[in-house]
Structures are given as C-alpha cells and as structure tokens.
Length: 201
Image (cartoon, rainbow, N blue to C red; front, side, top):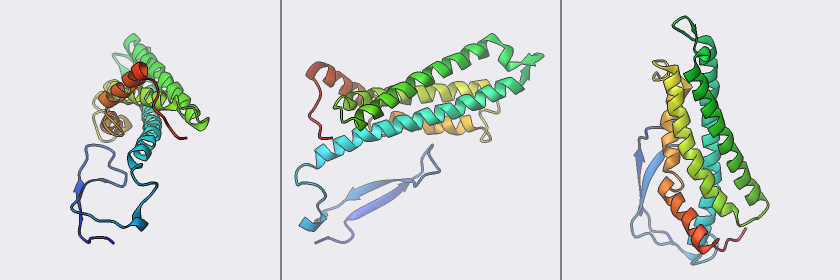
C-alpha cells in the first residue's frame, strides 16, 4: 500500500556536474509502503547502504582520476604550444615543476583507486579502508590538479572554452559526494583504532 503524494522533489541547480541527470532534494512525508515494496531484508537497509557507499567511493575516485587526466592533458598541450616572454611555456621551470607535480599526484591517485577496486573484486574486506583512502586522496587531488591546470592556462583556463574550467567546478563535489573528506577521515581513523567492520561481499 502506498500513500500518494508523500514524496516531494525539488530540483537543485548545481555549481558543477551539470551534464548528468541532475540533482534534487527529496522529502518523504508520512510515506507508507507494503511488504512487497521491501528491497533486501527488513532492518538491514543501513548495512546495505554502507556497502553501496563504500563501492561508490571507488567510483568517485575513478571520476577524480579521469578529470585529473583530462586537465593534465590540456595543460601539457597548452604549455607546448603557448609562448610567454619569447619561449614556450614548457621551457619555463615553474611550468615543468607544476606538470611534474600534477603527474605524480595523478599516478598515486590512479594506483590507490586501482588497489581499492582490486580488493573489492577479490572480496577482501580491506576494500572498505582503501575505498575511503582512495576517495579522500583523489577528491583532494582532483581539486588541486584542476586548480593548477587553470593556473597554467591563465585567462583561457578561466574561460568556459577550457576543459580545466569545467573540471575545476566538477571536482569540488568529489570532496562532498559519497561522504565528505572529513567523513573519510573518520572511517580511516575508526578502522585504524577499532579494526575493519563486518562486511558481506
């Protein structure tokens, strides 16, 4: 049995990730559902939600790696073809250092994301820890790399014509969605001090 009109949906206009299905605030007002509407086992919804969240954190990390790779590709191409004060940007040491830092962060992020995914595929409960480590690191990484990409591109990087501008807006939500940076730190700390939670894989 369902009570009609018990769900309120309010569409939200977001800063980034504007090419997807969209975001909305959802409110449930005195909703009643019958036994046929239950997914999974009664009173185990929170456990299911937590495993789903852990897996989604690996997905978010993949998004962070992809965005960062796009930014690095654009910054590298720009640095090779753009000149400043009579020589290509790529010949300036500061640009070389920025690109080297971006690449280093990206490869660390890619590696920890792959490890988290590998642990999940191999039904290793450690995936819970590595999902949070990957999510925390890559979300911060994506924001930093996008910021650096915009900086290298200068005025063009701040324009809607650049990939880095969009990536900068998109990357911020990665520090919020599927658990904030602070939530990941709590998870990591709890596992360090209390051990892994019981997880059914």
